Every structure is written in structure tokens, then in C-alpha cells.
Image (cartoon, rainbow, N blue to C red):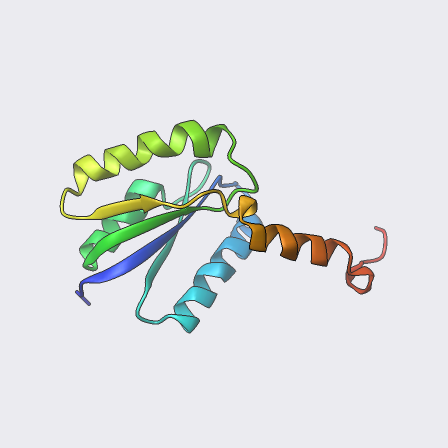
Length: 130
């Protein structure tokens, strides 16, 4: 299906463990169900696929004209501060007709900070010791 559309890439570190990806993929699924007009892909820096370039290629093939990269990191560390800008610049050179934007690290958003504090204080959510 080809359509002009905004798109989101949920960009995370990556892991060899497929269970690690489940929360990121759950966010993508939720976006897809709540915003069916929005194209969404997960992408990983290393250890698993798709890479950021692969995700952007797919979204561009689907007609994305504006891709927002959302760093799914708790803070703006080396990956968000140094690696991601280089990768996004490569995407801009590769897909000249697509506008790329990058949000701040999701963990630094005040809404996420408030939600994490709320979850941390929810003693009913504790699990028994292993």
C-alpha cells in the first residue's frame, strides 16, 4: 500500500534477546491501533534488526514523507547524543524527499518522568522475590 503519510520510528538500543524487544513492539502496536493513519516501525542500533536505515527505507517505500525518530532511551547518552545524529544525517542524504525529525530521549519527557515515579510508588505492582 502506497500513501503519503507521516511516520514514526521507535529507535532503541537492541538486544539479542527477543523478549527485550517486546515493550518497544508493544508501543508500536499501540500507536498502530490508536492512530491507524500513522506508519510506525521499530528500529535498533545494534544486535537485532531492523536497523534505523532499514526501517526508514521501508517507511519511505510505503510513502512516508515525514519521519519522526523517537529515541526510546531513558536519557540522552552517547547513542542519542552522538550515534543517532550521524545515522539521521545518512538518512537525509539517502532519502532527500523525506523530512526527518528527531525527538528528545523519551525518558527525559516530563510526562514519562511522572509516569515512572507513579509506577515506582505503586506497591501493589510488586512481584514476589525470585
